[in-house]
Every structure is written in C-alpha cells, then in structure tokens.
Image (cartoon, rainbow, N blue to C red; front, side):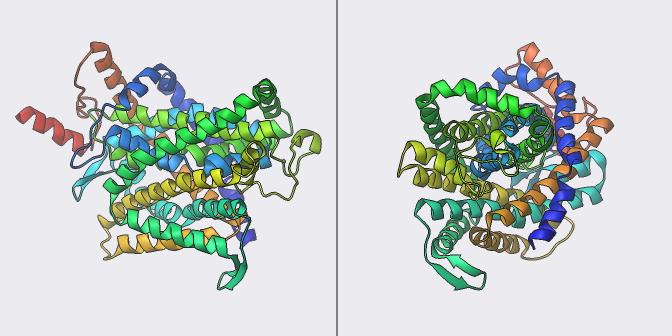
Length: 497
C-alpha cells in the first residue's frame, strides 16, 4: 500500500506541479499588478463589511470557513514535515508561495463569486461551476468535481484525524495496544477517532450555516491563541531570531537544499496549508453575500497571508529556535537539529517537543488541543467543499442518498485516518491536493486566456473605488463576461425597483 501510494504521489507531485504553482502565482501577480500588495488596506476594510443573508454567509464568515480549511494540520505537522524533509530553507519557499499564491487565491475566489448560483436556497460555487460556465467544458468540470469529492471526502480527512490522534497519543504518553480489524491500535487513538467522528457528525448534519457559525467563533480564537503562544517562545529567545532568519534564507539557496528538497517541500506544504490554487477556497468564497465579486477575492487573498505568513511562520520559528527538528537524508551539519532521527517529521511531534522544551508538561497537551481545533474545523471545511461538488454532480446525475453517502464516507475516512500511520495518511492527502491543484490551476489559466473575467472584475472594482462609490455594483454583461446568471438576474432586479 505504501509503495503504491508513494509511486502515485511521485507522479502527481513532480517538479512540474511545483513550478506550475509558483509560475501561476507569479503570472497572476503581474496580471493583477500585485493586487495582494496594492489592495492590502482594502482587504482589511472588507473583512467586517459584508452581512449574512438568508441565502449567503457574511464576508467574515466566508473568510472563517475558508480559513478553517487553510489553518489546519498543515500549519503544525505540515510545517514540521517541510523542515524535516526540506530543511529550514523550505520555510522561505512557503513564504514565496504564499506571497505569489495570494494573487492566485484572488483569481479563483473571484471566479467562484462571478459564476456562483443559488441551489436549494443557498449560494453554491467553485471550480466545477466556473469551469463549466466560463469555458463551456462540462466534462472537465465533472472531472474536477469527482476529484474533489474523492480528495476532500476521503483522502484529505485522514491527514487531519491522524494528526489529532498522534498529538493526543504523544501528549498523554500513549496507551495500551489492542488488536482490531486494522491491526494493533492504541486505545488512545481509537478513543480520539470515535470522539472526533461523533462531534463531526453533529456539525455536518446541521448544514453550511451551522458550519459558518461554528467556524467564525473558533477559527479566530484558536489562531490568535496559538500565535500568541508562539510569540512568547520567540520573545523568550529573541536574541536567536536574526540567526534563524539567516538559517532560513541561507539554506533556501544552497545547491542541495535550496534548489532541491527545500523548494519542493516548501511549495508542497505551502500549498497544502494555504490552499492557494488548490481550488478549495472558492467554495467558501462563493457562499458569501457581497456587492461585488472582487471583494471576496481580495478577502480570500488576505486569508493566505494569515495562514502562512502568520500561523505557519509561528510554528517554524518555534521549531527552529528550540532546535526541535532533524532533516531526513541531509548531512548533520546542515540539519543542525536536536532531535533524534527516529522522530517522524510527518507527525506534530516537532511542534509539540518545541513547546514542551519551553513549557515542560504543558507544551504537548497545549499543541494537542490547538491541533484538535485546527484539524476539526478543517474537517468541516472539507465536508462543505465535498458537499458542494456533490450538489454540482446531482444537477445532472440524480442518485438518491448521495449526500448521506458522503457524510458517512467522510466520517469513516476520519476514523480510519486517526488510527493509521502518519506517512500513509499524508501521502494519500498529498495525492488529493495535487489532483485538485493540477486541474484547478490549468483551468483558471485557460479561463484567463479565453476571457479574463477575474481581471475584468478587479479593474471594474478599482474603477468604482477611484470614483468613491458608496455601494458597489457588478454588471457582467457590461464587462463582456458571459454566463454569470446570478449577477445578471441581480442587475435586472435592481433595474425593476
């Protein structure tokens, strides 16, 4: 099983995908004239402007739902893996993919808003919707939808659950091994898997509004608490910070680390964490109630900064400052870590041991609790994304009980992931991320070449900004954007008033 998954992973995450992610980010940065920098102030203003409606969630709720997907295991165990396999220089490439990826996040999320539709009283949208409407290629949209259901419904949930199980197992010192149909399993992991499944079932059977209301409270609180804890550790070791920056930058450009493992692992774990270009963010962005599609695109670009430049950086500095890491397959002089080579970089152990070295007896449990909330809210986001793509499939392929199958399938994947090895869980998750990234990035590049709807929306928004309008409007026909039925109907309704 491990060998099969590893072989598939090597093809999906070849260097071609790494450079496609970086290249697309650079391309869209240039095409938007680096909107992720120019419109930073506007991003902050927009966070609290939108309001919830009967059909859609607020701008902030949409940010919280997408952040619940972005801020997860990748911020704790993912950063550890990037350092463990790519060296400290991988952190630099995570920063690069976040900065460039913010423009990609704008484009895909603006597209999600432009081509969203109303389904059973709520807004739905995402890559499957905009690929069909902007390109007219329903077959490609179907491939994306099915790949996303597979990835978010069955492959990726195991990563989040596995990290929770491993973190709790390490925090409480393990548990008695018992024989099960899955082999020898820790009682702790069985208990954790069962608890997570019960809580998950309660939330996902409540619908998108319950997910939004839960995440808008939990995500900001957990992220703030985690970052504050990291800042305490960094301030306690403030004299080491310049050296850590030098280590990250220096290692990022060495022939062995910088041009090999660091770029690959930095981009892979950066995309896994902030999801820019992956195609998951547009689903939550499409559900927002906004005056103009560009508004939610800018808010989603900001979420990439929060995820990588803030939360991932906090984890990286904790690990590097405390020396709680090792670099697999790299000379000890480059590794410079204090941990034994037997500690699995795919687990949250690096982060837990880093905090434990400063707060003995507290660090392990604290990271386990933080990881529970990080990973649990990510599971909710995965369900919502998978549900949206099942809804897309149901438009033409009517099979009773598809949503129910998804719910129980995801809960089964979560339980299975909680008790399996970290390396297998991450490898399966990487396949899911890679498939969506390939399909989505190629899709949005072709859409740009055909009609440039996201860029037209940005220019229209900036023109209204310059004019000082108090209420923004979006008329797709006036901009030459076709098949944006939701916005066309809204314009007609406004004219009739």
